[in-house]
Image 1: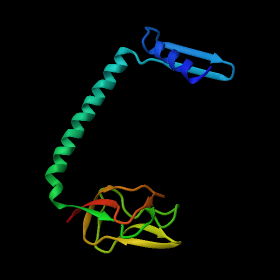
Image 2: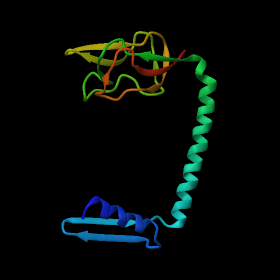
Image 3: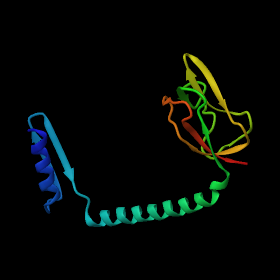
Image 4: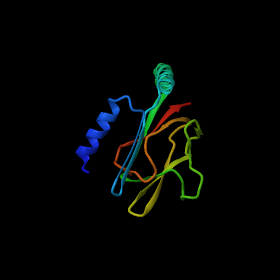
Length: 146
């Protein structure tokens, strides 16, 4: 069985009234189950509620953008949120960071460089993930200046 055969089977299942399909071929096993109409309606309601919440959040965010600032990386390096894997992270979204407080570590050439807050601010968004390779001038944090 190749991918084209599997694609045809799934397409036919999708367009049929069959609710469940289980297929075993040699060492390959496939089990599919369609959501019933009630589940689809619940999912659609949840999605529309989520979309409305996102719109409200965007509108609120637009109002608050006057105090937003982006903190960018001063060097190329690897991004870390804590001093070690077992340690507590320096900041979370919603935290208030004081001027001079460490926000993250950027490792460059085996040197650990602490990135400190330039002002008192509230962390709005963290734009990098642990272990990401960071470029010079890449945005790392969105903050609201207090």
